[in-house]
Length: 233
Image (tube, rainbow, N blue to C red; front, side, top):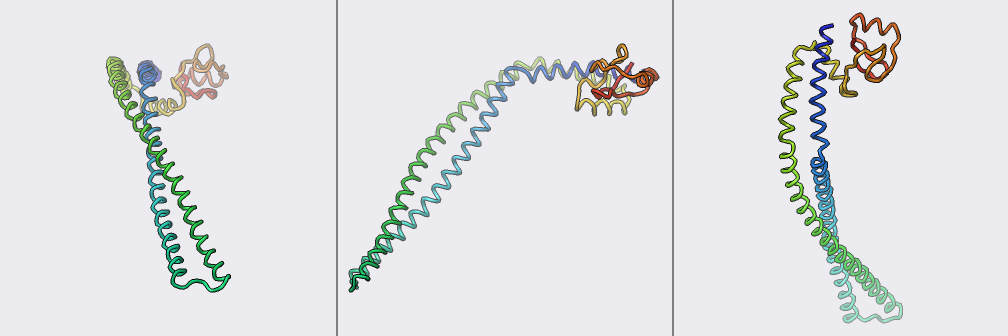
């Protein structure tokens, strides 16, 4: 039974340490700090996305400008062909005019797309500038919150280290097999060990059958079928 008492004594100090750690995590300043961090990460992601879109638009703009130059070259060639060898029939005139019309339509379409890209690119650059300013302000706020949080929790961290040391000192007296089981259960529920109280698991208040009660009273390690905690007398 002494091994269970050693485990219980360790759990009492371990739970106290966890309570201090959780209090530090729940600090309003820490929550603001995490919110500021998440905001910065979100805006950095948005900035990169905008940057990627601007790059894609710049590449497309280059392609369109080359296509416009090519179409204008074709149009100039048609004009030279008309000047050097004027069409002789109505069909030849019609065919030539159709080519000219296609070139001009193509140029207009490209120029229209080019104008749209320029507008969108300008809009993206303005948006990127806004996001950059937001990131800068958020970083300043984050740095100040970090200083405030470290100052605020300095004494609590000392208290936590002292409490962890107490728990560690008691942990050395716990049976290794029990400690392993303790840590396994703690991943799912805390505290991992419960007392037997009036025939019930004190962790979840479930009444236990007589066969289980006998095992516990006999010094056997029993886990509650309802909550999974180790039950000791």
